[in-house]
Amino acid sequence: MLHREPTRGGAASRVVEVYTFGYVERDVLESVAGSASRVLGFEVRRAGTLSLPAEAFDRARGQYVAEEIARLLAHTKSGHSVGLLLADADAYVPGLNFVFGLADPELGVASVYLARLRLWTDRGNYVARVVKEVLHELGHVLGLRHCRSRGCVMNFSNNVFDVDRKLGAFCASCARALRRAGVEVPREYII
Ligand SMILES: [Zn+2]
Ligand SMILES: [Zn+2]
Image (cartoon, rainbow, N blue to C red; front, side, top):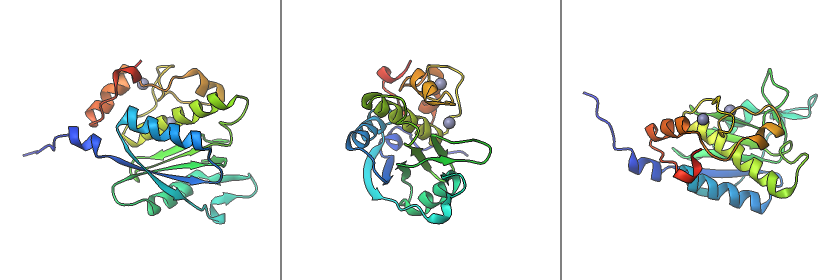
């Protein structure tokens, strides 16, 4: 017989460890920590810096290999925590010119790459972009897939203007999927 653990306490006790690489602005860190906690109920711990190995850097492209960074992060983070990396760098996965971020639900890790999110905008909107991409990647870690709803934070972004177009909030359907995963998104973060 299948026995289900109650999920309410599970969401509250979920921990995300935030790692940084390179220069990550203090207001970015604070906004990311605040949003992960308020929107997704994570307990946020600052975990320090992560040094990215030279082998994970593709010199010909001038970009990191995002999947290798994900594996490194998985080895570095502790136990059942989610590992979140904010990296002052550019990265790609094979088949794409670049990624703003990458999540691996199996490994329990998410990375967001800041270099392109800084482009063509002011400071306030740059911070908003990082927060959206963090919620997007943590959404993947919690089991969400890409969403067709254009305003939803789980909508796929091809470029920074796509990031600007979506909101830092989940559509009703994604919010329901999160509830099934034990995460109760506050009403003000549901479209
Ligand atoms: Zn995605
Ligand atoms: Zn959605």
